Length: 257
Image (cartoon, rainbow, N blue to C red; front, side):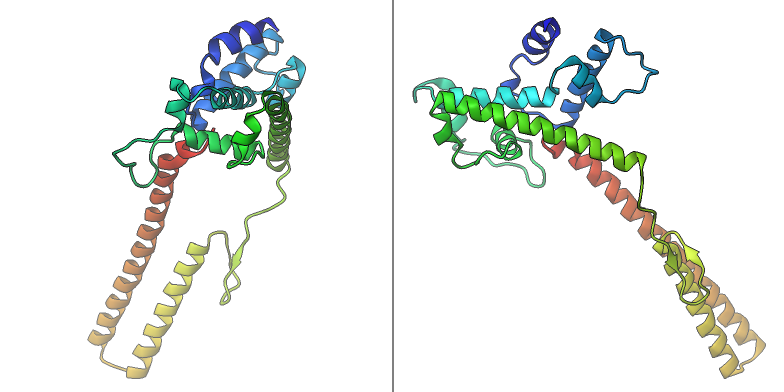
């Protein structure tokens, strides 16, 4: 109780109801929360105990659940304010000029609020009508945050089970010519292309029965074509991997916390 009242609520999460959080921020807060709880519970870092078990032993919810609850309580309080109050004017007003950047612009408080309402299964369009009644809104927040925390714990447990008990293995790609098993589809494609090119060139050389100089020239052309095909495939694969990594790094903070 002292930790929650002194450290979490009054210090760590001071003003969190107005924060615009990204997933990376939430991970940092959860990491600090877990470190403090493990010190209080005297759990050494070498002892493997899941974060869910630590929260159950401490009898505390996650940082994300606390932030969700404080955010919903705050927007309900602001909605019930008089129309001339500055917090209500700021929350419901919009800029008269300017535009947002394309792609993944910076997240607004309204975006975080919509994500929070959707995660708590609260109507995004009709929440203001429910927030007018303070008692009903408090009861709805309590139910929503409890359900949110239960779903978060269930998702974490399922993720741990899938990690500890992998059931799906990488699908092999058998070659229809030599029945060789390739782990990656790109390897199979390269092998098939090379085999097809070599077979076509051999057939052309045998059928044409040209001179030795022309045969050597054809072989050189075949080797060059094979090398070019392999290089192109490798470049395409590397480009796809680089684009995937760049996009993941660019948009990883765009998710709601």
